[in-house]
Length: 528
Image: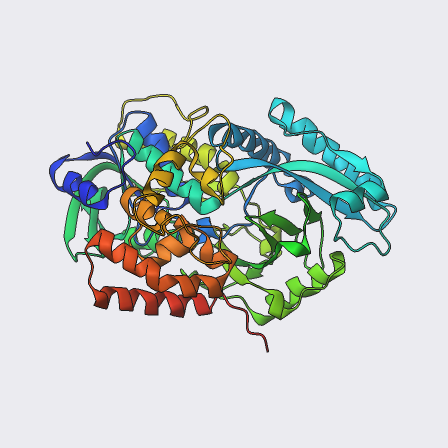
């Protein structure tokens, strides 16, 4: 077995070649859903392998609003069961990963007198549904208290406010923690290894064929059951199994703008329950920045790097100006990012904003188990339901779920207060700090405008399976999201450190910097 928690890609490849004639479970897809499914599987004692064609949380799972929430808007839609499930899972996640997830107060600014009682009662119901896993009571605030908590909210016409509590997290860092927890439990996760087809016997899936995107090597891998957890690409995977399968996905993209913290200097977030397009609007403090989002725009096809549309950018800037006393301009946007929701079609739907965020579980005629829909908050419950079904399909020994109270890698009772964002590593923080002390300058910031250190680059390569400059600057750190231009300026030295760790040459470094710079341009808002 690979060393617990040590996500060394070469070691995983060796295990892939030498370990098992047949896996119990092969999971296709390394986002929130796939990682959760892999952990659920290995926690029950099944021999588990996860394959991801790019990097963990490359797509949707690193582009969220950074909230672990029950879904206030689903309450408005009358989907009480989804809200209850999400609130339970929210509470569990905050207990299982306190180094990554934390309580965040939200304030609803009230500008119309009839909204106050409505939202006050609604939030009390939200509290009640959370039960013992609630994060704090909601209450109506005076105008003065609202301005105290939201010093930069638009004061004109403000009547009062309503405060409630939800969770906040770093999505990509939670994904890495999940991958490490799978490794801790004896499972295997591998990025940059694309599933290219399914092995079949008698019309039933018996494994997968896979291609290592780094080495060019191909693999044939046998499994008792294969799970499609490819999120926004789940239709493609289903059609790889059976080309006649009808598409089920109704992809919708959501854009977020990242501003300086001065736009929302307090410790509370703003939540606007309903904007012109029916979406909830958030302005959220995150990693020393202000994140404003989001939109809900139906798109034809899912891609790894979706691009914000001009009207989406304008919409967010206009609505941010309505609720903030300082109107942000295009020049104020440090970065922008766009994620695609894996929504499932429903007959006669009225646009993607109206589609439910419930998860959908399917089993094909060939026994491919597909899980899609859902959201980060409910990843664990999605995984539990999936492995329940997969165990039946694969004829695996029936075993109960063991993840309800499973502490994730890095768990630490009281997250350490450390410089920058090192507290997100939890118990690994000590190791990260030792790495930062190895080389002169590794304890210095990547850039004056970024809260990360050079030593974190080496740590990401050694212990978190970072393989590219993008992996480090987009997901092991969140540099690309916090300040796209600063991340580009840091890229050459990041490439140099990674090259030394991975044994790459100068040509690799140059290519990596060029590719990352091209990618980062789409995170920079045009100023004209």
